[in-house]
Image (cartoon, rainbow, N blue to C red; front, side):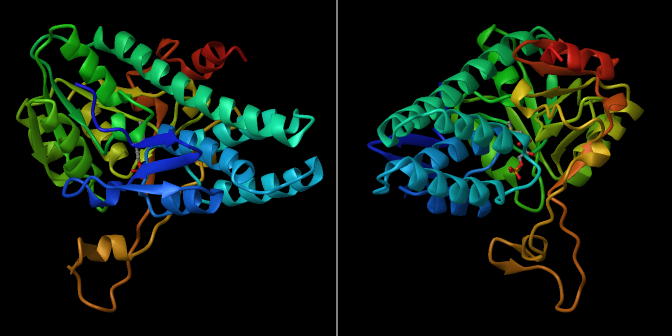
Length: 345
Ligand code: MRU
């Protein structure tokens, strides 16, 4: 019942599933260097904040594993180059920076090149295992919020494909099903990259979970018709006051949920919470190529000469969020007190 893996580390190589080809083709790209991993993150072959964090951790490890560095000085140079390159791939997902800092710090503690290689790989593996465990725990906390028969709306893909396994928002749904509850998922298609239509639907259909695909513009309609009981989405970066960056369109869904009195939950590991950011205005938002909006697949859909705006994420104010489901429990308002407290700050 486990969905396809977003990446597999084997024989000193990271094999990354090319999610741009889904649902049509299941193909893995072999990466043996930080440069190859950085390219996969940038081009969104791998995406989703927790998955980006784990593959970046492996990428940093690869920068010192598959190279013929001889001394600690050479290792540090190589490490810093790869660290900066991987950091520059996607600006919003906090897990990227969290994971890279964690691996870099451990590597810098090593007193030999061999020790550094071993430590780097061990740390990347721990980050991967901890993410799976965090998702399982998010699922266990989150499924208690779900009632038998609930119809749950989710946006983008916060599933096994966006994490090391199980998923955050989809992890809550998987855990509810494992607990014997019947649910129906409403998945938004998620323009422009269609992560909902291509990836969330792919995960759910392959496991036999009832899912209804809607376009992003239909959210108000399905809520007004009374088709939705709860919203559960993932997150890319959470500020200390609960403001949450997630896939573009999430904010619109949260406003509509409030209008219709529907609970709106964010499911995310604590590694997505940025302890340095007090509010959503400080979260860097990624702007991507106009081509993603101008084309669907290879088909051009708008005339030449048009100006395009393509922010990949928006920020949902904490005041619209009913609860944040983490591996340490469900955080509820007031977030400016309860988020620092769950982080032990
Ligand atoms: O641009 P993407 O596909 O990386 O955006 C992904 C999302 O917005 C997810 O909801 C988020 O990263 C959480 S994934 C568990």
